[in-house]
Amino acid sequence: MKAKNNIYPVIGSLLLLFISNACTEDMTIKLNDTEPRLVVDGQISTDTTTHLVRLTSSSSYYSNTEPEGISGALVTIQDEAQTIILEESIQYPGYYLTPSDYYGLPGRTYHLTIENVDIDNDGVFEVYESESRINPVAPIDSVRLEYESTWDLWKVLLFAQEPSETKDFYSFSIALNDSLLTDRYSDLGFVDDKFFDGNYAGGVWVQTIDEEDMELTLKEGDWVKLYMQGITEEFYLYLEALEEEVNFKAPLFSGPPANVQGNVSNGALGFFNTYSYTVDSVQFVR
Image (cartoon, rainbow, N blue to C red; front, side, top):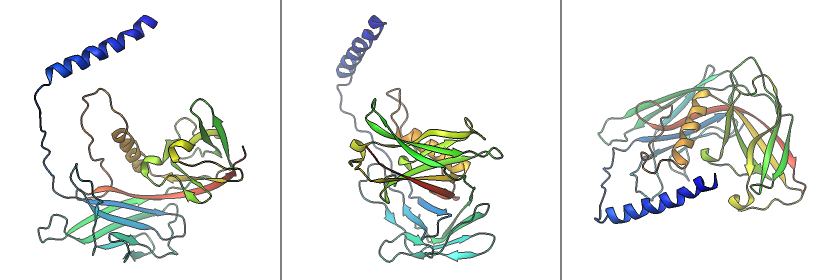
C-alpha cells in the first residue's frame, strides 16, 4: 500500500513537467458577455417580519463590482387570501419589502409576480413569475454542542421527531447571540428525510461552528441558536446544485461553473424560497 501511494508524487511531477514543457505559447481566452438576465433572491417564511425580494441584473464572468439593483419594478405576492404589493427600499435600490407584520402560513402556495422590468433594454417590459408552497416543519426537542477534536470544530446536533406521513426536506442555519452566522445559501446545512423518515433524530449533525473559519471564539455563556426550516424539494435540489458548482471539481479539466437553474420564469436566475421554521437554543459551556 505504501509503495502504491508513493506513485502519485511521481506522476504529479511528470505531469507538471509535461505541462511546463508543452505549454510554451501564451494563450488568451476570450469569454463573450451574455445578455443581462434578471436575478431574483426572495423569501417568505412563517416568521412575522419584513420579508424581501431582491432584484439585480446579472454581470459578466470577470466583473468585480456589486450587482446592479433593479429599481422601479412592480413586485406582488399573492396567496389564497390576499395580494400584497412590495415597496422598494429607499436606502437599498432593488430591495422590495413586505409590511413588517407579514407572515406565511404552512400549506399555502405563494405566487410571486415581477412586472415593469426591461432587463434587455429593448423598450418592452417583461413579466417574471414564480410559485412556491410553504411546507410544515416539526418542532425541535433540543440542541446540543459537541466538540470534534479531529477537525477542531463544534458540531451542532439536532434532537427531534421526524414525521412519517410526508416526504420532507430541511435546511439549517445558526446564530450566535442572535447574530446570524449563516447568511448565504452556501452556509446552509440541508438534508432530506430518506435515512430517518418517521424516526427520532437523536443527535443528528446538522450544522458546524468552525471558530477559525468563522473568525469568532465561543465564550462561556454564549447562546447558539439553531433554525430548522421546512423547505420544498425544489429548493433542496437548488441547494444541491449550488453546492456542486461552488465545491472543488475533479478531474482538473472539468467544465467551468454554470448558472444554476432556479424557479423563476422567463429565463431569470435565482430562487423564490418559501419555508416554515422552528428554532431552539443551547448555552455554550466549555
